[in-house]
Length: 220
Image (cartoon, rainbow, N blue to C red; front, side):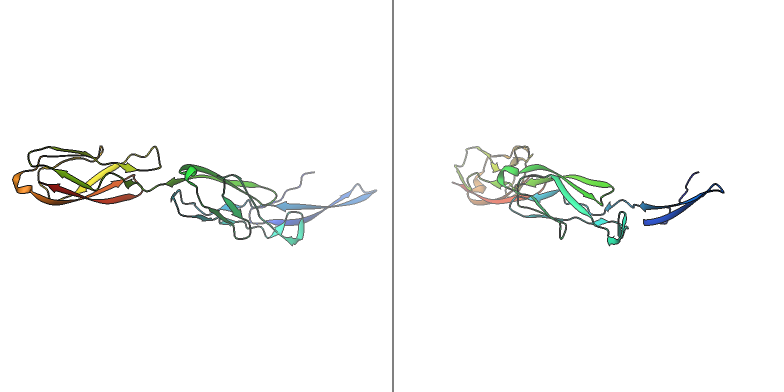
């Protein structure tokens, strides 16, 4: 014979009884069936963090089963595991929170895998977190040039993300100044009307954060 069971709207533990009878002998079989609803991951992690900050991720899971598989009198329990994570990262099973304070060596892309199981099915979430270092302008903040000379100056920035593409921007009231945002190069030929002090506001961005510095030019 064949046993059929419609589990469309039913979950957890069920008992069933099969009666066998050949008109001479009879037998009774009592069986148990567990209908599992696999756990579902509802949360989405942040994918980047600023170096120096602590990364926190609250892992949210939904499981509609209320009974433990094959133990109807015990509550269903969810188990968590983090098989892939950078050094120093930890997962608290009580409040389902991932905590991590990146080190200087972990600047860049870092991979994570969090697994959750209800003892029947296993689901996982795989993601990466990019640790970004804010760029800082380290070139001299004071420049001098004599009237009649041409100023060639490259702005330098320090960024621990080795593969970052930096873009410079400038704010100034000086006319006829040439500036390359990609190279951070400034070219200027001051005129007699430009004698004196001038202030430049230089910003550099790595696509995540922007560093700002003020440069002073003395024309004499």
